[in-house]
Length: 84
Image (cartoon, rainbow, N blue to C red; front, top):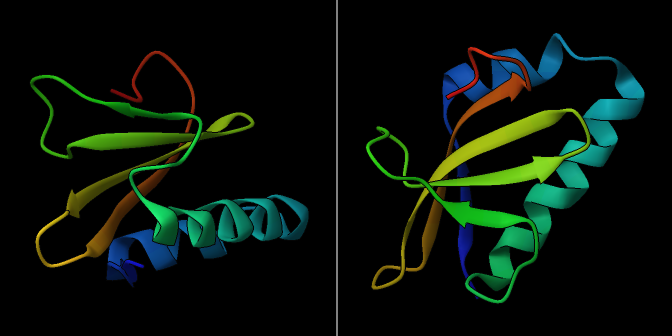
């Protein structure tokens, strides 16, 4: 079981999203406690964050340290041409 750690930036970004999407994103992030057995997660190449989770039109960018079992949520961004 992994621990979920939210950055300040991610929390601020989450608060700016509509309440229905906030709930969907929060619930999807809680599933990351089961890493690495999670769907819609992809490793990113040449990006500061190591992984991304798809949640509708949003992307949760995060790092995962399997040794320490911590998932660091870094950013939540709406999917567009500037997301990655």
